[in-house]
Image (cartoon, rainbow, N blue to C red; front, side, top):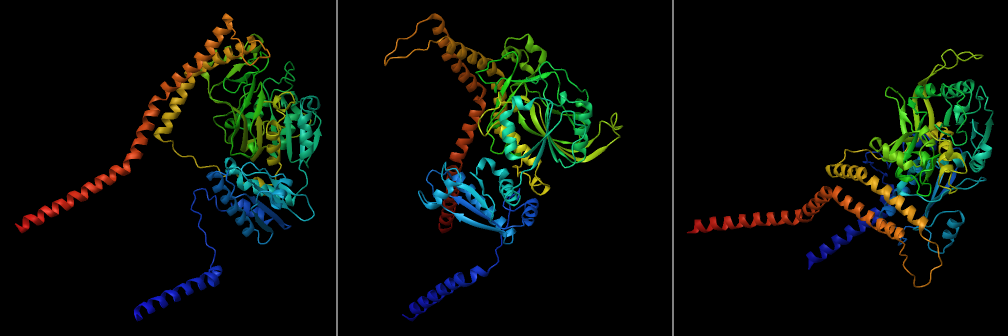
Length: 576
């Protein structure tokens, strides 16, 4: 009896001490965390810490997170926790300048009403951020997405910086084209986001107060203006430049200067002046190879999703664009932003005056198909291609240790005719890039946390080889299927159909319909053939994974059984 009582009292005292420790002392223990990730993604970068240290006015951040929404996936659930942890890091580092409020809005609640009123998206519950500063406008991140995880730190830092500095950055525009006539919608967006300054096309020197410059079609600018652009870049100015082998707005206009290629070479890049980019995969069906233009619809897969320029971007449309490449002896870093598919080729620009379709030209050059870069970010050392200055102007800056340039091999993407009216298309690409180039060093230094590249596995290499083999054989079938579909759509009569309809037995339509049904079957058979070895290996891996543990347990059990049996036999022999 006494032992039972003593045991009960001991357990009671232990429980009381445990509760007292948790209630009184647990809050006084130091908050210690270890970030063991390779990229240190759970810790603020030194650049973000520096930006937070420069905050001059307190801000309030309201993180809306519908944590219990049944439509939310596990990946988004994990990402929402990652955002919360990072926001807490910001709050802790800011030393009282950031007040974080965690809001979990219930359906039809006042919090949900405020979130919708502020423009937060509600696809699978709220997952957005609202920032406020006393006496100033409110800013928001409408929705966080796991696809943009490398940009998460920049997204939050951008909101904090804009709350502290709501004034619009100054952007200068220097164009060799009549932008007011062809790109009115884009100019309207630029004037809404920036303080836009128009420079004359004959400008010989960029004003000192301009820090960010947008140049369009420098082929039409004079050599003096080109010298001014070069000196602006060497002095530390940031440049976004649109060049084009065949601008549809000036298709017959001769080039005014001949030194643009030298300037590009000084930056470590080149663009063939007589080559247009054609892509069998990204060419839209509704413009099947017009002889005067090659339009490409670039999806998300054709973008560098780890760069600020593609922030919230879903598509970009280019027309009659060229291709950029890095020079072999270049010392600058060449970061592609937009690129074609692996079914793209460079075609002679003069061929379009004789050819009837782009398909025929792609077919002729199919053996040269590979991925090409349409837009790139260039950073690093550069030198002047005008070491003796230019007539009427003395020599200027001869070299720079670090230039910041973004070059796009197309000018037509700026036009209203080519640019999609969707808010996440061409205009957003231009706005993102200019906003990043005009950002101060404290914000621009925050780079995306791109996932570390690893060596591909045997299975991944086999998949890539199978994909290449399939694409090389399937391109012709896909072109035939596309032409057949277009011809069928053209010939089929448009009628108002009754509930029951007669089958059109026209010989040509029946033949086209048979082709429409047969070609997908051939593509499917070709795909099965190309991926046969990959599927066999995947099946083998599944079998190994499925039966490895049970077989291992059976072998262990069999070994234990044999061990016990041997010991029993040995013990029996000793007794006898």
